[in-house]
View 1 (spheres, helix red, strand yellow):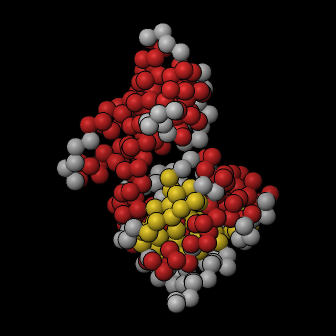
View 2 (cartoon, rainbow, N blue to C red):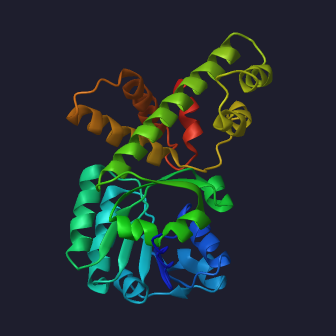
View 3 (cartoon, rainbow, N blue to C red):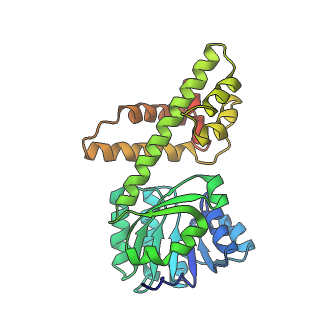
Length: 290
């Protein structure tokens, strides 16, 4: 039987946003020594208060650790982080980007990282703020298999499941597909709530009926009551959901795959963005219909 690769002795974490902070805190609670960096240093305060070391740059965070995780919000940010981190990477180090980006961006990041001699893994997550806090994320990984094996321990700490999908780009594509389905489901749910209201029916009863049937989904129970009351506390910002819809539709265009439902849902998210809902939860898509 092959020996299980040792877990990283030291871990870096770049990105201290709505997802990065709880993920990093879970790593620290599990005993990992963390060195952290964020473009806005003040965002790292909860991590530093918990015992993390604040690096002066992305490169310093990578140079000080064996494996670095990255959680940022856009493809542009992912590229900027990789370029900034590269001087601190070298053979024997690992770079794990858990951000949601398109396959082309992930492949470009991989080229930068591997150009330093380091190993690269993309591992975008399914799950928002709540699962991040609870260590219940799902990782869709692709890239260097040896690095995937090495970071199995940290992935287990931050998530409830992780899958290895092969070559770089496969994880990014899977994540975009999953998020496009989620976005379409939420848009349809919003339509149903609005129609319930217009028909003079009780929204609470509608939520109960859905919760007891085959179409029930956890996010309906979590988001539904707040949507009925016009409250959208951000667990997954709407601007990021619309970004993922856009990237998924771009992937579909590349592959000549029709996605009429996702395309229609994307228009709803764009309407909600025009109404100023960028930083609200993605369930605020309901405002596109109100």
